[in-house]
Image (cartoon, rainbow, N blue to C red):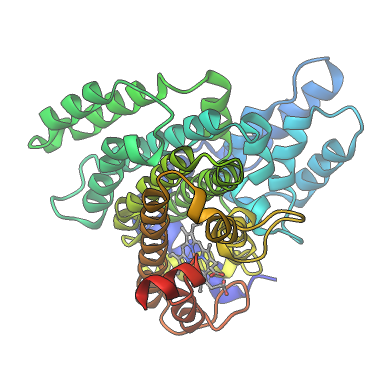
Length: 411
Ligand code: HEM
């Protein structure tokens, strides 16, 4: 149940301020009354029911982006629920609909589109990096276009610059996708001093980045943006979660693979994997530079709409911890246990230990930055996952990924 104060605040921000940071989203502001009222989707659904056309997913996405999950018409939610439950519904459409009809029982996974994105990416690491690349491209383009006409040093301009900078960090955030990185850097460097050319340059750089993304992943990423509100800042928040989730998933895969390498005696392969995972985690400061532009008021509205959906439910985050030095998967050791058991006979054991400690330091720094941002944005209030909030996160900062290794190294 959404409190009425939160509803009022959402309307105030979405309707009375110009689109962008601390205001409404551009798609919502620019939507026609026909789209915003749901009539466009209603007609498309009528047509679809009477003709053997593909499900009107783009119309559904456009409607949801213009109005937010919690303001969609209940009759349309019921129609979409029926489509989701129908046995013949395409699996990708059903996965998208699980985001669209989750108003009463939403989770973190349905919030950011875990199953929908997984449908296109699976557990494939190259496709996951392609997904991260597409999310970064969409986010940079969205923020740069919202910054057109914004004052120099305004919050929107700062957000846009931080988001565009992510395009220059793709070699670390998504190393397995290989867009024309030099081309991206050149386009952005040329536009750096000319604020008039900034949005166009970001769009060109985003297009270059998307060249490394299979078309079906790029369109799935575009459709995976299903906000609960009409606020611009929620679009950034969802994109951030999707990038972090991709990263957690890649790190979990790297740790699982490294365990197998250690068990089969291949120390150099294990240390390469963990080294690349550490590179990823060391790039998160660029993500936090975007996240920290979240305004307090806008986030308090988003929190009101996302109660019970917390990243504390993140499966891939938990998997990184479990596989590293926590609770291993059935019948397998953690990476820490495997390393300690095989250290003496492992080639280049020192390099692996160094990579593991780098990963641990980066992970800990990430937790510290997350705690700092939480304090800044919500203070000491409790989290949407029901914890004490910042104090819970502060305690987690001190828990290493590799507790025994860290104790031994420190000693
Ligand atoms: C405005 C930004 C954010 C704030 C204020 C915030 C706040 C919080 C809070 C209060 C918690 C504690 C659990 C709870 O009760 O909900 C938490 C947990 C968590 N958050 Fe965030 N968060 C933010 C952004 C993000 C983003 C973008 C991600 C990326 C996925 C993320 C990932 C996590 C994870 C993985 C946990 C679980 C940590 C653990 O159990 O140790 N957070 N967050």
